[in-house]
Amino acid sequence: MRMQIILLVGTKLQVIISKMAIRIQQRGEVVKGVPVVQPGDDLFWFNRPRLILYLINFVLFQNAFQLAFFAWTWYEFGLTSCFHEHLEDIIIRVSMG
Image 1 (cartoon, rainbow, N blue to C red):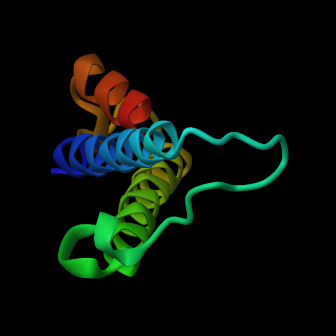
Image 2: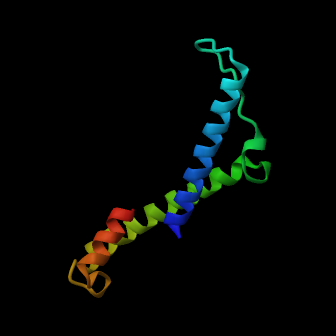
C-alpha cells in the first residue's frame, strides 16, 4: 500500500509542476528571482493541498515504524528468530523502509 501511495502522490506532484510550467510558458514573461506563477489550491485533489501533505506524512510514519520494528526485533530476538525467517523478507523490509 505504501508503494501505491508514493506513486500516486509523486505522480500528482509531477502533474502540478507540469501545470505550473505550462502557466509560466503561456505568460511568456520570465523575470529572474520573481515567481511568475503562484501555486493554488485548484492544482490539488479536491482543492485540498493538506491531503497530499497528510499522505506524505503517513508514508513517512509507516517507513519509520517498519525500520524501528525491524531494529527492535533484531535487538530483542536476533536475526534467526521467527520475525526474520526468510532473508528475502528482511531485504524487502529494509529496502522499502
